Amino acid sequence: MDRTAAGWINGFIGVVIFSGSLPATRVAVMQFDPVFLTVARAAIAGLLAVALLLVFKEKRPSRRELVSLVVVALGVVVGFPLLTALALQHVTAAHSIVFIGLLPLATAIFGVIRGGERPRPAFWLFSMLGSALVAGFALSQGLAASPVGDALMIAAVIACGLGYAEGGRLSRTLGGWQVISWALVLSLPIMILASIVYMPPSLSDIRPPALLGLAYVSLFSMLIGFVFWYRGLAQGGIASVGQLQLLQPFLGLALAATLLDEAVTPVMYAVTVAVILCVAGARKFAK
Image (cartoon, rainbow, N blue to C red):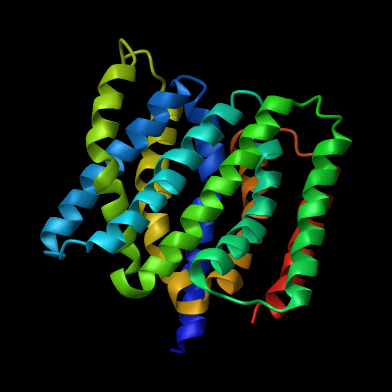
């Protein structure tokens, strides 16, 4: 199979998995503290990552790779999960998902800065238009939904874009699943300690939906999704494959409406579709 095509397939699988992250987080934070959810998901995924690295006897990263792994850990292991969990205390999953429309632009920018990629000018035109639509959506709500929630989502997107681009660049030499595994392992001691500190007094009162939400974000969002996603970015290019993230709002809105029975307004659908079309145009000029 062509390397670029393989990158798109792996990237698409990763996006499908990630699309369930915000709805699952929304369910989990109804009973779990956002900080505990962030550290617990990383601790669970980190323990699984340790097992994987031991089973396959992976070599340790070099000192130079460790610096990049710290950036990945800060962006996608800590930053994005914590900021989105905090945001989802103020906004619905359906509302927050629209902000994911900013991720392709953020990833592409960091892909240029960290990955050395050089998309054509038309790429930036389409990407900026898509970002403007997302910003316009937030303003059309009069920021009444929650200025704090929207600000946290924007910060989450920036952290995630950096983590995606850095991980995609590093995956070219270290490997996709190895990148997220080592990033999780680096974070593991702190995450285990923080999990103990922020653990609820009793887990017996936690309902199954919240536990399932924690299980999903720990296993799929924090580990399995990244195995496919980083492999896809390394194979097909950070800026190009990164545009697949524009499918995530559409899939996420459908999940939020189906599983959480949240109201998804026609405006949300219209903005999501418009952003997808804009960044699909950007994909054409990614190289």
